[in-house]
Image (tube, rainbow over the protein chains, first blue to last red):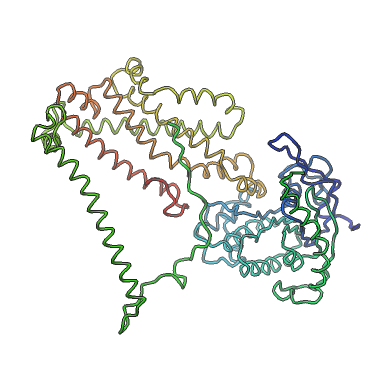
Length: 273
Length: 310
């Protein structure tokens, strides 16, 4: 998968990440990982559970440092938390002590925008994610889907050039989830951001992405990349009935299944590679 | 004394916004012929009500039995009222103290002194505890250096310090405040420390990606997050501040509720000791209620029913 691009949004070159385990051994989450993500691409990463997908995202975001290899974002080597990245976490990461507007306004305020201006922009974004009227609510007063909308607005208000999403909708029920997926596509189409969307749901990956990367069981490395040539704009709900969708699904699943089985066998043996 | 109060768990999902359809609104009055379902509901409701009434009756019954038994024992000579006091005598003493003052001066003056010491000790102890807990929670090196000493300090039976404080600081207010501070400090310290350590790493990472610098991480993420731990420790620490004040007064003072207890004890006046205890409890209960209000003011973002305190 040699993507030749003048300047990729994200580049990983032979990246390896190892962690110390409490037992005093190394656990290799990611091994010799190399891939590029062109600017403006929506890229989904699928792989079995515990296959270093989240680790990869945190390396790109600069929240973690690779043990070996190089991560480049927009041509600059990652050194500390990237200013041009947005991150949506798997679990709720909105601040429970801030109401909706203040949560969304957090990023601009951290980046030096005046409080009044940040609030004005935040109100705009709250409306754009469909939460108008809920500005003064605290997160505990919102449903799971609404909290995800807050998190989405919180990320997008910083106008990230790359948006990293770590199974953001995994905790939602199926209906809310498709709704959120469609809205994500809608909001993304208005930006030029590159998206890396980690999921273990292959359907979700194909429905959303331009390209699907299949990761192996841990230590993760890139197994295959698939171009998803489904037309845009897409409706996540309808694209699933597309004949092409089904054939892509069958093809990628063939590839993914071996890894899932491998990961499952390993977890049954209880061995941490 | 390492009272660690667990903060509320993260709120559960799905809260129906008020005004949304589907909530249990007022059930319409029974139609012409009440259905079986409504009849069943009525039965359940009635049963629940009578159960609650019974619980209340038994609750009051316990108090009547204890106080009545005590009074009867005192009157029949089973328990010598000279040593054990007598409820009616205690009530009479409280009445006399409030209307005519105590042998040591007006009652309110003693209450005010004790409260003053308590509040001062509370404020100083909480401030020091939060600052120290936060600093050690945030800085690994500081924690490594001072951690063992703090634990050692916490292991000292603080009441013993009361005597030394009276020698150092005299019979006035300072010695009581000092004792109260040594008691409250540790409660708040351990909670603030734990609160900072237990901050959800996702929240920290989220703040970092959003662009927070170290100062913003401390004051915009760590502190509010630790606040739920700190506020739940305020109940306990106010209680400790009160204990510090009263024990300090008891050990050596010329005013305050603890001094009243000491004076009553010196005069072999058991009813006086009990009267001072009852007044103390009332003061403590009022303070506790105020503390709950303060807690709600400090953490309005926590769902009701997940705030600390029974």
